[in-house]
Amino acid sequence: MKQLLFIVCTIVLTSCTYKPVIDTAGRSGTFNENKADQITNDLQHCKQVAKENTNLARNIGSWMLSEKMESRYQVLYKNCLKNRGHSVLN
Image (cartoon, rainbow, N blue to C red; front, side):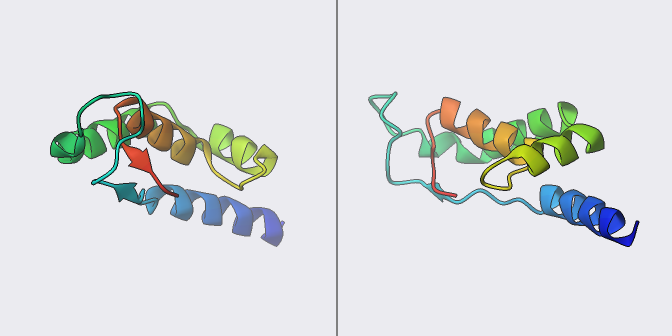
């Protein structure tokens, strides 16, 4: 029981503290121009999208099944930024 509680707490804390590392000088390859000028808006938007589409049960499930030990929140956040043309390094 203590291990389950530890896992749940770890996932919750990890999801809340995820900070993507973005190469603002580079391009993802899908856009002709640099999209770094929109980074502040994109970070806020993607963070909100990830929060709205994640719950604790899905976070735990995706974290346990993921090869990279990523929560659903992290995957959504990262994919949102990549789809907006940012080069996410982590």
